[in-house]
Image (cartoon, rainbow, N blue to C red):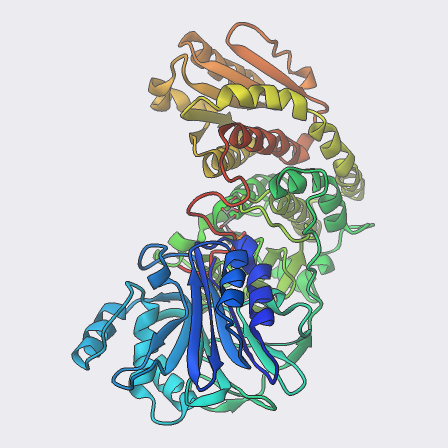
Length: 610
Ligand code: F6R
């Protein structure tokens, strides 16, 4: 999703800006741009291609300067086109452009501001809400950029992180944030801004996380932060060692494939040689919190939401604590009945998802103070906003479609289940030991499922010509069916739906013909016989069943029923194992269709807008 980098220095900063954009590239974008202060004027290059092409353009046009800003854009207002790409310029009635600005987020009152600025004589070159902010800052500018940005942000409604500089103040960049992340990087007689510390890796590890409402003044030898009320504030400086590795593809065709195959390692790292279950795995004070709470509310989006749905089955059956799971973007706009004895759990790979962050804040505003996050980025806003946390150790995930982040989330959620069960007195030491043993064996079990890849590739060739697919699961495997369908649709663009198998006859059975592949998750569990009946309902109507069946299910290959046998039955942890073949099926189907697997159309990695 959109990314920001800014710098004020005494050396040419274009390499730093472009390198920063490259580090943010994997999050997805559809255009990019850079602007610098050069020879008393603003210079800019913008492109609807990759950052590498922008870099060539910058070299060709000799764009260089000591002060500048850069951006990757994921279109919200206005098509992905050069004239909509950031930075946006403004300079009403002053000849050349005076203000350059980049923006992440969405300005909700942009129509009203646009009308006001048009009436004041500003001509708009783009359809973006961002250009509105550039003109607003220019309109309010009276010789002091910091002052103008503070005034302008008071007029903005919505979410934003912005970076701005001005032709008339060559050694200054001003930033502001509300609802979208923005960090300051400290250097020696040079300072930086970015939407993520990752963008500044290799340039500085001294990072300040700005808070909502902050406006920051970056100059060569000083930085100055004021809060939403304009009061000077000190924000702590963190030494942040951002992991930038994992960029090598090695023997894999795509990052997604690499990340699928990294799952044994990622799960093992997430388990961190845990020897016994204790609430303190989730942070100091977790025991007291787990003791006090009597229900759990899980908030998340997309794949992370499906991890939450799976966890509901675990927590309710093993810890006997009632669980609600809510799509974050819906929860925050719904009238709910809050309870101070709720444990609010957010799940997020990036830790920056705007909908999940907003839902968390909403829950807190309703008086729910017991907050915990399962997150893959230790320095993210989500971790900073929650009292308790568990950091999954998936490593950087570059493919837009989440794979290893999901299975490590499930691993962490299973640990949470056990910690809750222990605190509530419903986990015997023998059961704890048995569960820990299963968890420790998980990486090996995942590796055995990965070995099914050649069989799954043969299926993928058949799926490639389809336009629709159904996914069936029951119980705790229903969320895994949802995840399988999401993977298939987001990277292969095949329309896929998931249903609890018992629900078929209540409507979706009407879709079943011999052109409809029906992927079925068939673990050996207490629902197996019911599932077999549901499969018969499909078979009788000519549907083609593609079944991932546990070894001892006695489901056999026959006409219209294709079976891949899972290496072992994995009890409560079975959803983690059954995820793997669905990831591989989606991946190889997408490859067979020739889609852009790592960067599927219209999608971004870290969704920082509402
Ligand atoms: C799908 C996918 C998304 C994310 C969702 C939440 O493959 O990756 O559905 O799960 O956008 O993102 P995080 O987990 O970063 O909050």
